[in-house]
Length: 475
Ligand SMILES: *Cc1c(COP(=O)(O)O)cnc(C)c1O
Image (cartoon, rainbow, N blue to C red):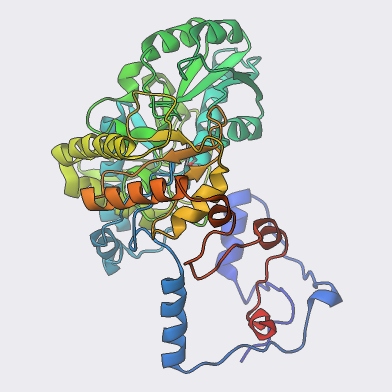
């Protein structure tokens, strides 16, 4: 067995790696030996060596200790944790799709056709002119969209535009992506009805505005009724309008951001199109743009010439935002899901998602300050601590909602049951809400009682993670 005592890459070891590096960065790459510091190296590495039955039991036990959308409802608002039908995994596991991402376009025509079709489907669903599949997550899509906006403004001698405007209910990734793309972030307060306050928007936008980012329905689940006027205000100031696609599940097949006046959008395929997600990935965050912006899309873009599919470089491309053409296997699952549902299936999805949220809201004793909402709602735990309530809900065999966000609702429980839940599991969720809401102080502050891991010290778990199997010896 080879002994990896240092990280080394010699020419013999890895010609492909070096070639890729030099192609990507355009320089001769000399990979030097970089010995690790002594305190981080060891001579031997002790690993457990269980027999197969033990190994199998270990992983099955871990899965049983965990909570998943396959074990019960998962109404984690904003995240759209819908059930992931396993047929998409079968499609993605097809051996004919497993080709090296660096192969020539001529030799992978089938793969390119699939990507091209997905670009087209997503463009149609969003009302956009073209779509890039490259960004690996929604947040990466936001970053890409911000870079496209910057390139567009620069191409129009408007490179001085330095600000991105977001409402105070925006998901944290919106201002973070804008800042990463080099913009100053301007936050505007929501109106009393929980929607964009047009006066506040008018006051905030001007000749420095590059982009306004807004999801719809917004983070409270409320449809931004004034969206056309909002887009007009931003456009008149010379800015572009960005659609955060995390809430597309509410609109699928019924309304399109492109028709509302949005210029750029991302799709969270791991939310809307039933691709499994969690633990930070992998996902995909394709970005759609209107006609005026297609030249700025990342490189490469899949295009069709006659009967052939090829990779083309958009004229004023912002460059690459991820390796190759994006997270291929994730994109296959999204494609399989969209193709299986078709037009009518996508329409049913949004209708059921909205119906389920409204049914559940009717069954619970908590106050819901903002309505009428669509596919998700934000309930208030009132005088209770929302985290305690969420922990108590675990005892009812459900996953709790998102807690304490958005801040516009005190002790928020942001709830999105998704279209996939039956009346029975919605009732189970309602029992969990009401059981926890009406529980006594002691019951709440010591919860959860019936889970594998009890009340965890979250801060300690985050700051001092025990990542070695040796930690088991200490227990
Ligand atoms: C999930 C989410 C994002 C970010 O998407 P990721 O794919 O997790 O990076 C952005 N905005 C909203 C409203 C979201 O719910």
